Amino acid sequence: MSRYGMFIRCTTTRSKQSGDTYQTYRLVENERIQGQVKQRTLLNLGRHFDVDKSQWAELAGRISQLLSSQGSLFSLALEPDLEAKAQRYAAQILASRSAVTADSEFTSLSVDSLELVRPRRVGIEHLALHALSQLKLDEKMHALGFNRHQLAAAMGTIVARMAYPASELATHQWLQQRSGLGELIGYDFEGMGLDRLYQVSDLLWKHHAELEAHCYRQELALFQLDETITLFDLTNTFFEGTAKDNETAQRGRSKEKRNDCPLVTLGLVLNGDGFPRRSQIFSGNASEPKTLQDMLTGLQAAPDTTVVLDAGLATEGNIGWLKDHGYHYLVVSRKRKRLFDEHEAVLVKDLPNQQIRVQRICNEQTGEVELYCHSQAREETERAMQSQFAKRFEAALQSLADGLPKKGATKQYDKVLERIGRLKEKYAPAAQYYAITVTKDDASGKANAIQWTRLEKPHSRASHPGVYCLRTNQTDWDEATLWRTYTMLTDLEAVFRSLKSELGLRPIYHQKEKRVNGHIFITLLAYHVVQTLRAQFKTQNIHDSWQTLRDKMENQQRVTVMMKRADGKTIHLRKATRAEPHQEAIYQALGISIQPGSIQKTVV
Image 1 (cartoon, rainbow, N blue to C red):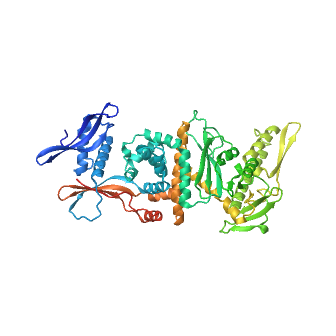
Image 2: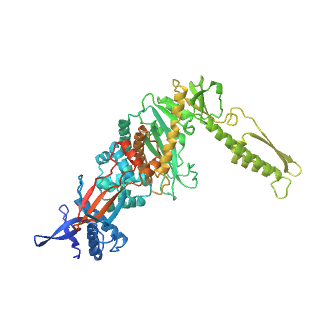
Image 3: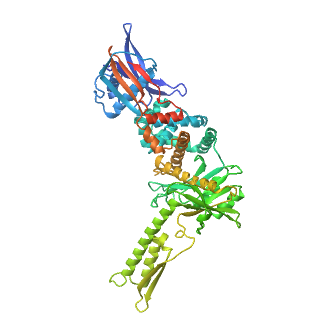
């Protein structure tokens, strides 16, 4: 028995269902009542209590010390793991005894005894739980059969992906050591094993179709979303490792220039407000044009739905399929020929150095409208790139020509042509506008001169910098509507950037296919929650990126204040730090409390 009045007891119990015996552990305290010493259970430590028996007395003594605030916080100098358990168990005892006190209480306190313990961040967690509640994700998971532990693990892994995107191991540590999410939902993450995060990833993926459809239905109801615009695009991300047993992990063209790694491709169908309607995971070498029909089949689109596509997906086959299935389309044209008459164009965006003018042309052969768009900013960018590539290409040609009479330089005619071919490939944006002649000495078989002239190619990028073409069968829309609808593709690109950089989609460390799918789907669920929040912030004129919002909420934490009273008892007060003005503005935009979690007051 511990000299501190607390001790740990092991009890053998028989299961009523199976009849098997097992051991449970309890933290027990001696107390004197009317002259008699009685024992009461302070905390059930469960069946999986794993502290060596030789440390029980030390652990019980440390818990007693934490509750009574005797001496320095680390006066017993326990090893880190045991100290963490002592603080965790002390916090659980205090939480079980706590009561919310609204009235002011005046008493004498010892300032020298003041200690602040167990800081846990709660800002992003508070926002995330609000949006999860709005989406009724917890209710849906419960209806799908998630038990209490699975539901907590699912919410933990989704919120962690929003607040601290990392591996399962790092997420597990974050939930246990840094986040106050457990307090907000009434769950002890410090007692949760790492395996539960892997298991819940598999469980979420198992129900991904139901959960994805549920989120979108809730978003439709929350925001009265317009379904007449459908955006579709693909992105890919890379694996760390070989992923040799994963059939979807294939070599392809990496969006991050990581062609040295196997890839997996994510396809997304979104509405015009950036909410995902459907997702699908493809192999890393998936052909972009072939994925459209798979993704749009079964969406049951409204008759007036318009699908917006980038050039990579705007094949004639896909456009024909859209027509056959009653879709309208607005796509980036693949045609290289550029037309633009400034006098026939309409101004649709008028900002300094960012003007956009568009020229509408009806194509009588196809029945389509072609919209030639000129971007002032794009023109400046393309001119700068053209100039840079042209200078480098000409310098490389000049260097090759200057070497012809020199010893040791490339002179053989075939070798010179090969070098020029490589330069054309390297500087392709500029090389197409040059005519190059190589003169050959028939006697020696060597090249003796290289000459080049710049060509003027009408209707090209060089003659019409900053111009691109859209094509559509939405013949009733005016120029401004067509252009504004097309710019929604930029929002889709922002979605992919958010998934990859802000929500931890890349890189993928898992090797098994179902774990990869689970990782991607958790990121998508986190995006649903983030987009639900940002849609509400936009109505309050808050347009911050998720990373900026995350940074703003980072430093609000829940802490426990411990102080000795004049009568020798210790007050334990646990509450969130006061929200700073910019945090208050965020909470007020959502109409939620600026005080995450309840106020817990305990006197020991």
